[in-house]
Image (cartoon, rainbow, N blue to C red; front, side):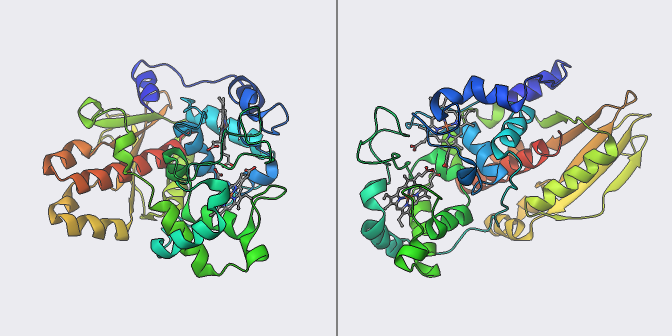
Length: 341
Ligand code: HEC
Ligand code: HEC
């Protein structure tokens, strides 16, 4: 993202020539194998990928698995998209409801100790070694991944974790606990709550501080204004925002655009989120942006502007507000990134 902003600032086009397969062989193959059978890394068979949303894959690639060999990659949104298309090979991406699952973490801990600990470890640290190469425990086909890993927890949706527990992962030791042990919905929810309780605030993983960040994030869109606006609206809806009619402004009527530019403001809101912020501090209502602006210049290039309200949020000097707001702005950044290519 930072790199991208920089490239835009330098006026460089965001082109990438390599296809998904090349990106895979250059970055992933040495650990995940030529035919994706796994080696130091887990197998990435299509049946595994079938459990993974685009969001999960994007974030897994971006955050890596700190301490578990899988590096964090600084690929552009376009490169990541190509790579994911290659991994999917035509299989449809699942969509998970991002609403957190509510469960009883203490009950989940008990179930974990009974059923999961022997493979995933008492501290959810994963099996010995990784993947299915030289370092792993030889009595296992594949070393069970770490579940308390921040890279995993920031990437995984609760609903994905639940689905994997209930349905298992085809042709692996990760069995269907619904089938084999008659797990109830509640048992799965409690387990998800327990696994989730190991997540640390995302702020601890952000390398840069707000003061170094730009006041406005600017993205170059690969499409024309109409397509960009449609994609932004779709992306906002996918991120659980309610989307309002867009406002079109010509000739910079109080907006960002100059005299001969076209400008569309896309407005969206997530009431649950908004309510949460208003409870923390009612003054937040005026600074949370809930809008992005798409501007087409004379040459037809479309840019998308997202205000970085963290600069304003930081003045509240309230850790909880900063953490929640950072998460929201990160969501909005992802939402835009997914719409500009
Ligand atoms: C240096 C080795 C290494 C490289 C390079 C690597 N990975 Fe990984 N990857 C791993 C390991 C190890 C894990 C499992 C972590 C664990 O055991 O907790 C993993 C896990 C994953 C997972 C999670 C799988 C699952 O079932 O949830 C995905 C997805 C993934 N890697 C994709 C990629 C992609 C895409 C690339 C290339 C951009 C890549 N990896 C490059 C080592 C690597
Ligand atoms: C017999 C060993 C074993 C047991 C028992 C087991 N797992 Fe797994 N689990 C695995 C392996 C191996 C994988 C990785 C499979 C693959 O992707 O190839 C896995 C994958 C997972 C994943 C996906 C993680 C990722 O990085 O994609 C989750 C979540 C998970 N297990 C949760 C659980 C929970 C919760 C339990 C207890 C109800 C459990 N597992 C019990 C072996 C096990």
